[in-house]
Image 1 (tube, one colour):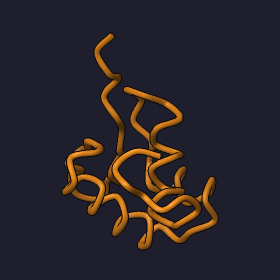
Image 2: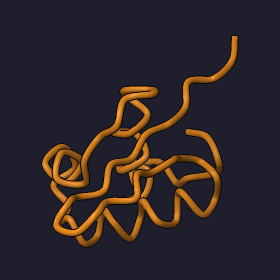
Image 3: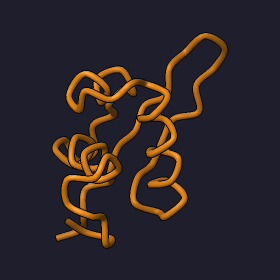
Image 4: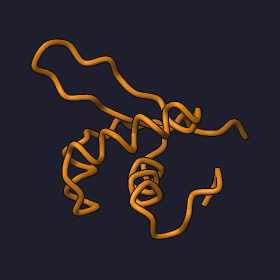
Amino acid sequence: MSANLRPGSRIARVYAVIAEFPGVPVSADEIATETGLDSHTVGNHAFNLKRRGLIEHSQPGSGRKAHYWINPQEP
């Protein structure tokens, strides 16, 4: 796993779900369902991944949920 994420850790599980679909926005609820983590935990880990520059995210409006994605790498 890239960026020195400990395999099997919660943050690595969140990253793995997002990385499974490069360039495709994935909601926090979808990540929570796939990982078995609650949405709050997913949001915290996604924030840290964004801060590390590993993922991008949408800025949700009022009442909307955040989405996260990885930009596909250049060939």
